Image (cartoon, rainbow, N blue to C red; front, top):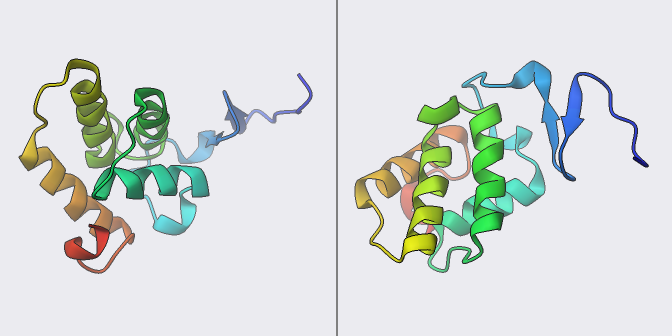
Length: 115
């Protein structure tokens, strides 16, 4: 391994996992790594990512740093990955919760700004 990792900052890939802030349920948009923010904004946009591995990368980050399995960004990412894998319709209510959550986290002032 070419990169040293400290016990409080572990990473599987380039996106660090801050152990001290895991499942804090208090996510601020400034704390979201650029790559995860980009994927998350893409999931809220008109042309969301079509690679399930990319979507699952964001899901993992939100699961670890958000509210765990109940985090709306995690749930929407999983729902979108399921849609991509099975070509079944996605849950519109879950998408609405996701957009509201992104406003709460600080990604936008209004839901319509995300689309």
